[in-house]
Every structure is written in C-alpha cells, then in structure tokens.
Image 1 (cartoon, rainbow, N blue to C red):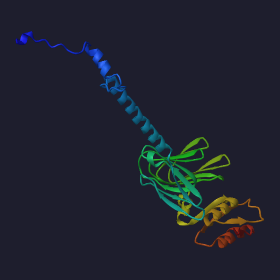
Image 2: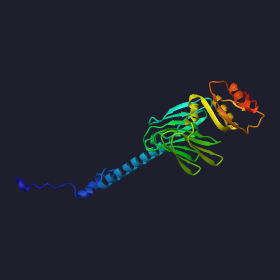
Image 3: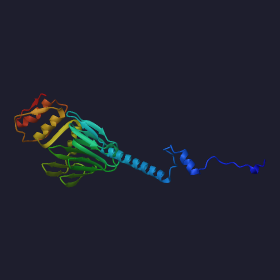
Image 4: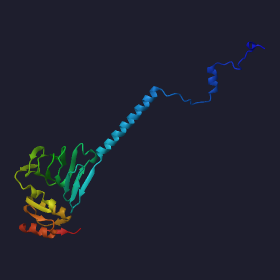
Length: 262
C-alpha cells in the first residue's frame, strides 16, 4: 500500500475556539496575566497606605506629651531631652512633647520652676498666655493664679506678658499682678531662686501669698481669724518646722496661725 493513499480523518468537526469553550466551560476562575495597569494600581494604593500610616504616626507624636509634676511638700529635678535642667517647686507641673523636642523646644508650666537652658535652638516656656523665649540662660518663672513673675539670672530672655514684650538681662524682673505689669532692674535675682536651696525670701509680698507658699512647701492647711491685708518682707528656711515659721511670720503683725489637721 502506498503511504500517499492513506488518509487520516479527525474524529472532530469543531474549530479550536469551540473546543476551548467546551473543555473549560465549568471552570469559573481562570487566572490571567496581570496587566500593567494592575501593577500601577497596586503600587498607588501601597504608597497611599504608607503615607496615611506616616500621617497617623506624626499626628500621634504631635499629640503625645510628657508631664512632670512636683507634689505639695516636695521639689522635683527634671532633665529635658537636650540636657536642659529644670527644678520644679512644690505643687508645680511641666508638660512637653518629647518626640517633637528637636523641632521646637517648647514647655508648658503651671506653678514655679528654675530653668538652666542649654544653648541651642529657640526655647520657650508658656504659662497661661504668657511666654519666655531664650537661647541659653538661667531664669526663674513663677506662674500661679495670684501672679506671674519672671526673673533673669544669666544671659538674656524675651518675656511676653499682658500683650507686652520685654528683654531681660541679669538682675531684671517682670512682674504681672491683677493686670498691672512692672519691670524691675538691679534686683538681687538670686533671692528669687533661693527656693532651690530651700530658702524663701519675700520682699513686699502680700501676706496671703506668703501663707499660700508655706502651705505648698509643707503640704499643710493654715487657718487664722485675722485679716491678711499686709505686705511681708522677710525670709525662712524649709529646714525649720512649719509651726516655727508661722510664729516668725505672724509675730510682727500680731497674728496667730494654726495648722488644720487633715
């Protein structure tokens, strides 16, 4: 038999498209090669998610605060991230944002504190709308309900108080009380930072403010039947017992104080 005379007739009469559709008719999910557009979309959403995560982290860092507080009857030494040192007086609080510190060295103070600021970028102390700005210096800030007081010991500071700005150099002081602002020169600034050595000096201070300070330093409550509308000039050491301090302070005015038991 001649091979050329042999004919092979296929058993199907369908084209390739019909065979494909018939064979894979029951297969619902067919994996197709990813297009260029799909890859671009994937990276677009990945980058967007990364940016969103960074925004969330930055927002969290901006909101996070560290709070340091000295309780009544105690003092507290604080070292800030740049090495600047702060000593908090009794019943005082300091807030700052550690994760944003090297962008902006800002602290918020309630109470009284002595600052030893390391030279560097701008350093600001904010207290109820008032502000102190420095580069590197030592100064004392008193920021309580009764008054606002800033005393410069070394260097130079800019004080904004009662919508006024003042530049203070050593032995200068800004004092704000009842809306009235006074600036003093050639004072003995060390007296106003004496509390850091447990020595308290008062020059023409309302007697009621002196009693508040004694209450804070000893964590006690004091009562009297006398009026306290006097100005007091004097000093005391926290090494003394509170009863002794009250006797020394009240004697010139004929006032007797008593400590309320809690």
